Image (cartoon, rainbow, N blue to C red; front, side, top):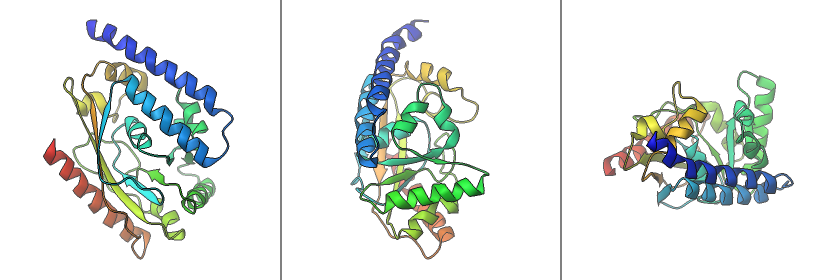
Length: 244
């Protein structure tokens, strides 16, 4: 009960940040303006929860950035480091409160099991990749508990091949001075969003660790790219875990 009471100020701060960001983001049209708006909102949201970010490596200014996926916090952590465009599952746009943020940020929505719309998604990714703005996606296609990096889906790499874009591998992990990062920070399995956010607000001393590799060209085909960059991200992930 005492922990929940302590969480209230953080939740109120986060609510104010999200509501204010939604108002400011409604009329933005340009991808770069939306990306800058998202970066500012991400920094404010992390500050509301007193989450620190420790980054290793240079953040890309263009191309594709691929990373393992542990939580909705990953989006805020990565967005806080520079202007980017995310690729996310289409159902995320329907999340209460945060759904509008997804729309205002210019997020490219991926529609599973809809081949026609999947082609549209790939074209949108390719269009943004042709500009000087990074596209971020999580090739595992789902969140995990952070123990290992799940296999990467090859179709995610096709737009990068079409645009001849470089790919930057990245890995993310979390530590905290209270709670259990695997259960209280990672959002996976049967977690319920609002219940998880409430618990997250009680966790103290959260640090997000982001490890970035070197930008590299794609392999000859998308399956090779998926396998190669899975190895790269897995190595970056192991480096993070060995230091934490």
